[in-house]
Length: 82
Image: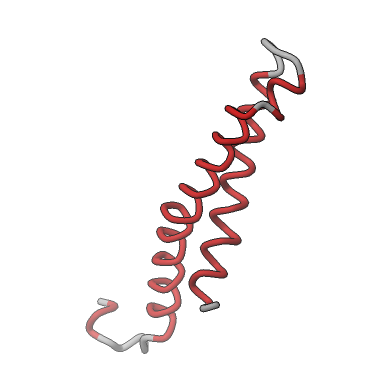
């Protein structure tokens, strides 16, 4: 697997799990633990957040990372940096 996909899965997957977990904690005020975390609807929501995290958040973070690495490699007297 390429470095890009490993990066996207790691960053986006973690983002999706954290967001889904935070929403489930908020749902605990209104419903039981089983309904908030283990219902089919909530598990599908978690899957959607993880997939969105991988493809959207992971990709945008990868682009930022590559831009940051490229700008660090440019010499300081390069006209692009001015």
